[in-house]
Length: 361
Ligand code: SF4
Image 1 (cartoon, helix red, strand yellow):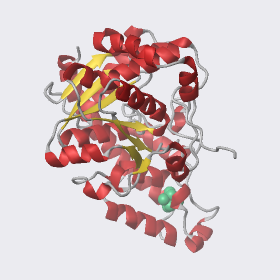
Image 2 (cartoon, rainbow, N blue to C red):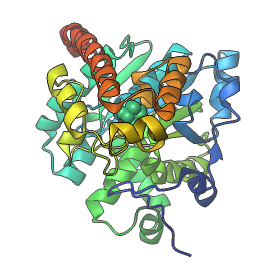
Image 3 (cartoon, rainbow, N blue to C red):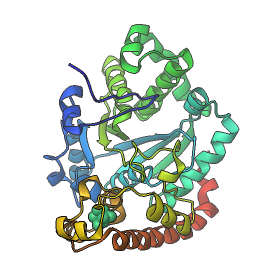
Image 4 (cartoon, helix red, strand yellow):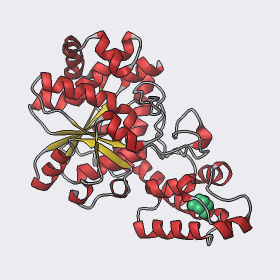
């Protein structure tokens, strides 16, 4: 059977069918859990966070107010874009519901995978953390810690110890064929994810990621069992597509990305000139047949957070499908919403910039 879903933690992933992923990779659907979450944000309500491993354990901790950790890492290789915001929105939600954030700057990974010098990685990581704070992450050291892989002895030692738990064949089976430095970066991530338990004993931990990062979750759960830790939970979000309609939002195609530090004018230009829509060839046809939000990148922006209110989203969908809303007007709405978001976000970035260095080790 041809496997049409391709998942590669260190390369290009191509996921065509998220329903199939659930069966192929043995993860659980998120759908039945959402009703147990307190005030879930739209990413959960709309099935954009579509699957999980053991997330019920984290919902239980939220409900009983038990401690839990939200582990996240950024590979500081570029500035944050609208797709990166999805992970931060989840961190903010989980932190507000009692989790403590442990935030790794994955500079060893960006050195191995992108040949990014450690000093340069530091600058980009700082900018990424400014975005996180501006998006609502509370940097109070009681609720969040930030560290760099290359400076953290717990993580570096753990990577060495864990290397005795894996074989070359196992790494090849999980990650595919790679150079040693990539396998080393993967083992360093194992140290990151287990750092809270290595330092404080058994701790419920959740790692929100895009599905391309599932190989890390599978490996760390295996290592955790071998070392008698709680296997970390994972949640998986879908990828937001590039505005142009080709694959996921990625730095390889800047015209299809909206960066969080770019001007509203530039973002609107991309929305108006580059976005692939579900519109018809002529206005008359669109009025008669309606648009196709299911393939439209403007609608995807709305769905992935530009419109948080479900009722408003439903209304846009109805008006699109009935031929009442034309793409030009719809792009204008998207541009206004993106402008409001970016202007506000950039104001908050200015504030975050003033305090960020206090929280970075
Ligand atoms: Fe997309 Fe809006 Fe056009 Fe519908 S009206 S296809 S949602 S741009």
